[in-house]
Image 1 (cartoon, one colour):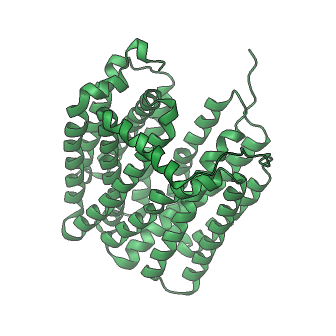
Image 2 (cartoon, one colour):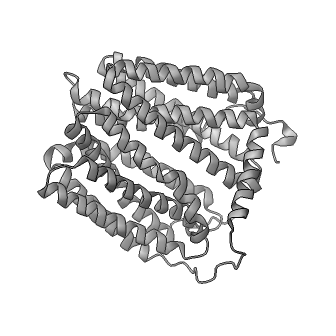
Image 3 (cartoon, rainbow, N blue to C red):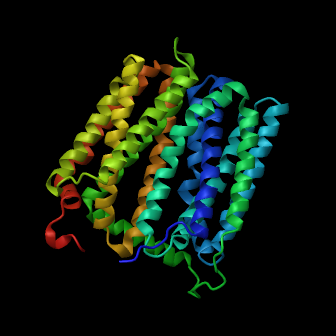
Length: 414
């Protein structure tokens, strides 16, 4: 049996470009998160930025996808990174010579998020075409490990860069990396001159497609409950971000570098958990119970997180990262196997919109709580809410969910 070579020209170029873009994004995002809180002193202001950045992901992919299917996707990918490069570079120059403007930054964040939603859709659409036939599993394994590995490496480095050079120079460097990524992507060789000549995608056809997916989800109580829980859990977790930054910035004895290590430990736990999934297979009959246990354990760990001594905080996040990656892999494999192939894109799109809406809403809620309560109590309240949501949305629909996680033999190939 011959093995397909994965690292050909196109795949190597797209991974190199992704690496440069991710390195810049991690460093820039870290610096900007602290800049916003330092300038405003408000968790609500930080949360509003997060909510604004999520808004384009609710509607732009749906609007742009039909156009992207009819034009060369490589153009969207390259030009998106070029535009992102100039905006980030310009932001860095502004901070180098002028004062911070919250309204201006809010507007620029919205524009960058619009570009990001298009770039993500372009990458998702073009990436399968750059993986050699027969090497799909390896190709996606590489892309899935890229962000967590680079986060572990770059987050502590970003903390050092922030203290040494400041936000402006980090953003200028990020703009340069984004431009290098675009130049690298331009060398990808992909014949996109022939696009399928299909009928114009009308509003009526779009509505019909959405209606079919909605009708399917109405009948699938377990799947809908799982998506609702993901909206809650992911939303609360997103809302924690500005609170944790505020806590590490204001609580005596804590620093930005300690926050960086805090995040790194969780990503290390996730990486170890993902690696073990290649070695250990959990029996189907135990998958639902294991996933529910992980959800409730994760929530309980959140509830006590900021009340612990710092070393135990690190252990807390490492355990959560380990358990979280295991449950996510089991969930994704089970759900994608369960959804009918003809509905998979639309159902996945619905899940993405629901989670994005949850992240936007809970970012604002948690940010508001941060204005009136101790940050530790805010995290505890968020963890408690997620814990209760697990009982209602997961355990309360366990019969329907067991059909997803623990399929009968005759249903496993459907």
